[in-house]
Length: 283
Ligand code: ATR
Image (tube, rainbow, N blue to C red; front, side, top):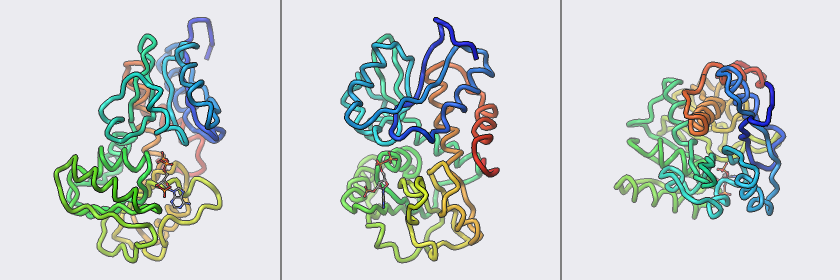
C-alpha cells in the first residue's frame, strides 16, 4: 500500500479500539482491488465524539465505521439517516458525500447475510434474542423479526426489552413479542435459535449472557461478538450449531465497503484477512 496525496481515507471511531479487526479486513480489500484507499483506527474517547465527527468533514475522510460506545450517540451529529439506521436508532457506517454526513446501519443485513451463509433460516423459528442495545435493535428489527414463529427479547434492563418488543410489534404489525429480563430465562427448551446480541463475551472476564446449562443440542446459537466466546465454546460442547460473530463482522464490513467505494467487495479476500487475525477456523 502506497499512501499518496490522493489516497482516500476511511476508518473506524470507537473506544477502546485497540482490538478492532476491521483495518486489516478493509485494507486487504483495497489492495486486492488496487484502489487508493486506506482504513485507519481512531481512538475516540466518549466526550470527544462531536469533534471527531466534525473532523470527518474537516479532514475530508470518505467515511468511517462507528463502534462501541458511539453507535447511538453519533446520530445527532449527522446530516441524514438511512432508513435502517433510523429504525435501529444506531449507526455503524458514515458516508461523507461532499461534506454531507449520512448514517447507515449495516449490522442487520450483515447479520442476515452471515446467517444465510451459515445455512440458518430465521423464518418460522422460535427465537430468543439476548440484548436490547444498538446491535440488538439493528439485527432484530432488520432481520430477526421479519417472520419468526415466536420471538422473545431478554435484556438485563427489562424496560429496554419492552421498548424493543413494542417497536417490533409496531413495525411488523404483530402482537405477541415477549419482553423479559435476562435473569428471567428459565428454559430454552422451546426455542430453536438463541442470539447473543449483548456485548457479553467481549471482555475476558465477562459472565455468560445466559446460564450455559440451558443450552441444548437442538439449539442454534448465534453470537454477534466477534470472538471465540465462552458461550460459543460451551454451545459447541453441548452439540448445538454455532454461528460466531466473525461472519457478521465480515458481512457488515463488506456492506460498508460497498457504501464507501461503490464497488463489489472482494468477500473472500476480506474473509482471509479476518481469518488470519483470529485464532481458530471459524468463518
Ligand atoms: P451495542 O451497540 O454493541 O449493542 P449497547 O447499545 O451498549 O452496545 O448495548 C449493549 C447490550 O449489552 C445491552 O443490551 C446491555 O444491556 P443493558 O441494556 O441492560 O445495558 C448488554 N450488556 C452489557 N453489559 C452487560 C452485562 N454485564 N450484563 C448483561 N447485559 C449486558
